Structure formats: C-alpha cells, structure tokens
Length: 409
Ligand code: GLC
Image (cartoon, rainbow, N blue to C red; front, side, top):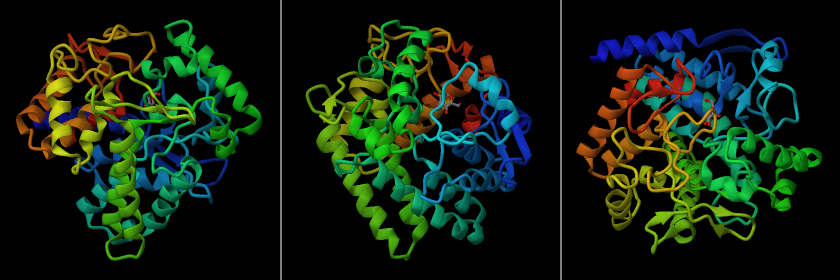
C-alpha cells in the first residue's frame, strides 16, 4: 500500500463513521467520527482526539469540527466526559451490553486519558487558525484544572482514575487484583466492574467521595504520562498568557512524581499506584512504557525501557509489536480475547504514541520499524480495533477510527 491507498482507506472509514446533526437533547450541532458504527456509535474522548489528528492529513475543517464538538460537551465545572451520547436513540441498544457510569442520561460521568490539548495544538499548528485556538483555551484550562482539583486528592501531582475504562485500557490485567477478578473473561470483568458501580451508585458524580471510598483508585502511569504531555501542549498553546507558567509547573510536578513514585529501579519499569495507600502494582504492561512519550525523561531510564522491554523478543518485541501485555507475562492473551481487551493484542494508538516518543529520543530506526509493522497490520487486515501480535490478524471492531492514526506515523 502506498501513501495514497492508505489515505483513501482512512478517508473511507472516517467518512463512514462521521456523524453530523443537531442533538435533540441540547439543540447543539455535532460533527464527529465515532470509533465504529457497530460497537461504538457515540463520541469517545480520546478516540475523538486521535480522529482529529488523523484528519489533519485529510480534512482540516473536519479536524476542527471534531474537537469543537468534543469541547462543546464540556460541563460548567470544566469536566469533559469520556462518552457523549449525541444520538440518544442508539443508547438503549448500547447500554444493553455495556455499562457506563452516569449522572445524566446524555454523557458519562467518567474521564479518559487527557490528550485533548495535544490534539488542539496539532490542529492549530496545521491550520494556524487563531480563532480556533482562542476558543479552545478557556475550555482546556478549565479541563486540566478540573483534573487537578477533582482527581489529585493527595496533591502529589499524580491524578487518579476511579474505574479502569477511565484509563482507556479497560480490561488490562494490571487491574485484576484491585477489581477482585474471579473469572478471567470479559464476563468476569463486567461482573467485577458491576460491584464497583453498585458501590459508587449513591455517590456517583462526587469524585472526592468516590476516591476517598478507595474502592478503585489508580494513579495510572499511562494516564499521568498523557496528562503531562497534554499540559505541555497547553502551556505552549498559551504562549505569553499568564496561565502558561501554571501548566508548565504542573507538568513538571507530575513528571517528577512519576519518577519519584512510579519508577521502580530494580524492575526497570514504571508501575501504577493502587489505592489511597499507593501500593505499586508490580505488573509490566504497555502502560509501563508510556513515559517514553515525555521528551525530558532521563536518558538512563529511556535506555533501560528500550533495551530491557521494548526491543526484547521475550517481552514486547513480537513479530507485530507492541503488544498491550508482554509475551513473558502468564496472563498474556495474544488472540481474540472475546472482548477481554488490552490483554495481549497490539493497538495502533499505543504504537502511535510510542513511535513518536522513541523517535524523539533518537531511536529513528526502531520507530520506523514500529510504523512499518503497524502498516503491515493494516495492509493485511484492514483498519481494525487491534491486532494479533504474532500474525497481524485483525481483531475487535472493523472500520475502527483511531487505526487511521497510521497517517500521522
Ligand atoms: C474501548 C477501549 C477504549 C476506547 C473505546 C472506544 O473501550 O478500551 O480505550 O476509547 O473502546 O473505542
């Protein structure tokens, strides 16, 4: 496949998954790409940011529309939901086999990895549209402040998620213990999750109380790496504005906390912290590598992550890297896990993050190989949700939006 064919394929998916209209419930216009018409027919937060980044290469007006629609879902307190149900008529079917934390029928009351300021920065860089930037700034400032105020109760710079879907890596085995997973299947996961949801029911929407309840409280490495990454973009977007210093300072603080509290020198990996007690969850997953997206990660740590994990055939260097769980882990599940996701297959979004991160640290060849392997997955199997790390077999949803990120790799 040459660049043109890849672009045509991506364009077909982004156009097919494009939803435009006026929402019955708030009278607002929407224009966004849903992750997949079959499985995910609404607007998802981080998917939407990825779609906007892919759209930069195809249709910049649509890239702006995507992000404007996402930002139009922001609440007065700054929070931006992880799902907005623009087309409410599709909700009953979706909720018959998915669970979502909600306080309002129109959107979830949960977050997703805060990549939005980076997406806005990229679209702004590509278009030079000042109006777009200026309209976005107050929404972004309010959103990143909301994260700090609502999600960092111990004020250590690391924000916490209250359920696994908030980290975007839903069924990752790193959450098994905290969830008390008894049956290692998607059904077992949903059963365990329902218990958390039931306990949250009376306090849903009050994140301080939810975090204090300490039922599921993860200072997640992937989420916090993206939080730093996003705040750096926000600081750059702010330019000379006084708030720029605030977000640079906060980004530094979160980076320092990742290094001080999540880095495990003995293991050579970053680990999430579970619970108010901040117990390290000593399990390596794709999340443990995510600080590589930070350009100021200390060199010895970069080298350790690359040499010990990324390029090791025992761990992440499978024929179609990078698997969501290293091959060495007893819980590694390379094939189609029947909806039990993030337990082995390779995903294009994490490859997008890590190929850019590695390139930034000087590993151009390695980055090129990850890009070439990602492209091979798409050539063999189409734009799928995730891929078998040994065969490139396409798995999960078809015509999946964020796999078009290949255009930006
Ligand atoms: C799955 C993924 C999540 C993604 C969503 C929509 O739940 O785990 O990261 O945002 O699907 O694609």
